[in-house]
Image (cartoon, rainbow, N blue to C red; front, side, top):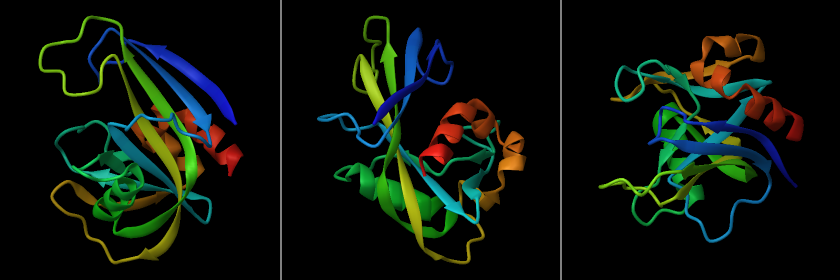
Length: 171
């Protein structure tokens, strides 16, 4: 299954001009290593979010857990590590659930550190193995289990409403 959810142009959180296509899919693009990975983790109908501190994305605050891959990590290993670091929740990967394809429509910028012209962000559906006590760290205040009726409290959820709806339909 692969379904285009939406296409956006000139998003300001990556170099632009750009085109970002978001797909719901149980298969990820072959032969491409993502620049970042994220995990959808649900408990009792609520979505796991990380409560970010001021810093890299101060306006985001409640964000989906995930981030960039460390050297030598597989996307799955990175997703598991990022979720645990940002929320104190240990997960296992159930399956791929979505991806974003980010394409720059300009010549490669000097010092551009991502694959050019197209890079990817992968999203995985995860299940909880354990939930540790977690008071936060240098980048997060802790975790939040956000109910669907509270998704409007998260900029990430508002920006990715269609993606969340499609993920919830797919599970």
